[in-house]
Length: 161
Image 1: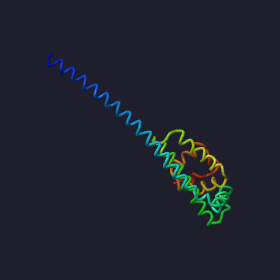
Image 2: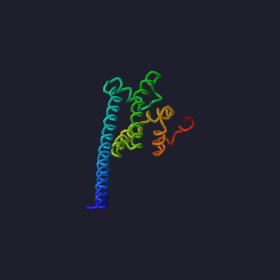
Image 3: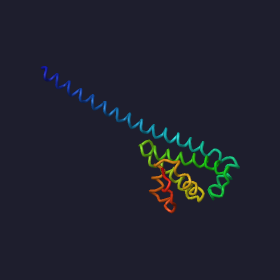
Image 4: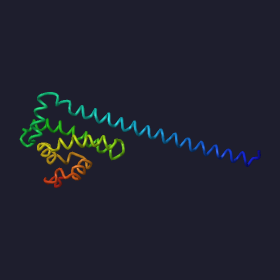
């Protein structure tokens, strides 16, 4: 066997090693992506659970119900308490949308958050809250609301920051 044949065999072996390495890396990246999606899902569920835990107490559940019916009818103290409850829920939704935009969650996962949020935002008091407090939230939420025209009947853009 001459040196040229040995060199050709070496090149073939090297090329095969590169192909195998790339295949291995592709499998590892796919696995890492699945794990990242699972981790994001787990953290979001934990965040949501923490945000809604106060609703297990009758006092907060009643406040939440009143606030959902009419934010404007709440007194100043109840508004502060409702603000805290609803803002945690909204921030959890913002987080889910943001993670999805960066590829860290699946379409199905963010769709489940969207269904919950659509139910929440259907409440008149929540819409009143969002109109009054929209400047506390990210562009991600504003874009999501605008895409679906949820607050189209309000003039929430005047004070946007």
